[in-house]
Length: 514
Ligand code: NOJ
Image 1 (tube, rainbow, N blue to C red):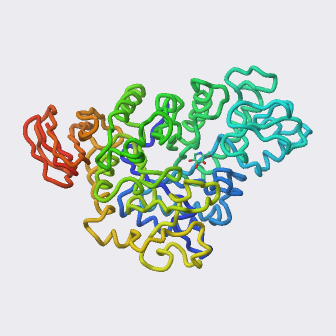
Image 2: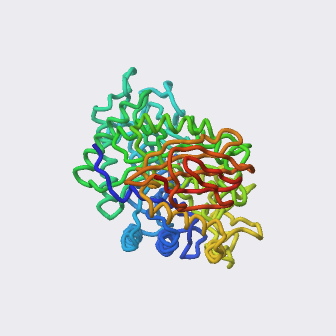
Image 3: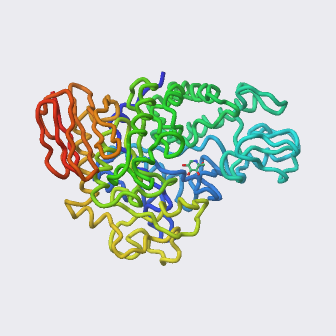
């Protein structure tokens, strides 16, 4: 059983892509010192925790998801001491910090991989998934071949330069496929525990785990991978019981069985997340249909024991900016949903001010279509939007060139801005247990085309009726309860009566009910 850090129950996360957040040394790329400097900004918004994308040594072929030293901060971001200072400062402000753990693969420049390419057997020979002949390829994402003196092909996990670490095969069938409890896979698992130990003992509060469901190969139901995470959970329970673990897995009934505290709703696969925010007719733009999302959500929720542990992000470094598809005040409605759902909400840096997807960029560090969502944070109206003092052409990714690009400063000064609305919504969530991670949810209206989304959240001794209506027309909703107090409202004032609510078009309301 996973021990549970209590702070997760009312956590609101802020995701930081370190390259693009704040540059304090004028080299055009964000750094750890910049994150530390901006912690009060995150705190002021009301967020309680951060997830920082990988900030470790790397050749940056996949923006740092190709690690070459797990235990060293990439020099361009600063030093390990700078990261420890960030933890300390965050804790002083009451914020928690998750690092990004990439257990499934390394960079091909990692010293482990270089050793494993050698013909002569050594400590790292079995650290990666190798076949025993160059002419045989492992199945999956493809393989690395013809680059080693060792005779074999090595499985890759994502891009070609990301060789797959060896956690074994669920049912080995070929002589080179190893069982999960054989020496090589066990050594890999233990090495990953050492990485976790390294950062947890220096003050990090836990990890967002990259591709957490992908460790064991030929593991259709993920039973082998679940067993690995259970083993890691035992280690954490013993040595770091307060460590929080959030998985990029997308199957909470599997990841929670593995001892994760929370799992992400993914923007790919079968979640229908994109129906809400990123498709030709997104629900929150007022023209779409949320019903397949709701159906799938309820299924995952029920199968994972009705625990509110599915985290819904506003966006992330892998998908289009929310603002590319959802416009104007509809963004506020999208956030009224994101901030009233179970699980911890994740706000991708800049989404709180409606930062846009920057069109037409050449790929940077393996970003490809993702690059436009990774542009520098727009702090204020000064040079480079206050991100960096470097000449504009030296910036890691160009800033949104539009003259009316949103900035944090302007939005903080405007009570009607998206950021101000989000700040209000976070405060409402923090004031009501029913709206937080573990509060239960029961859907009243599934957002089928032309209809609002509505649900009742309950927790502690509270019940809160939530209705979000991005369509143009008012809608009548029936539910079981007596309205007592409106705790949040946007748009038209809702008409409330016993067991009934009429919500205006382009409006949202949260009501305490008895
Ligand atoms: C998921 C990460 O979010 C993404 O950015 C990365 O490219 C892949 N995993 C590979 O690590």
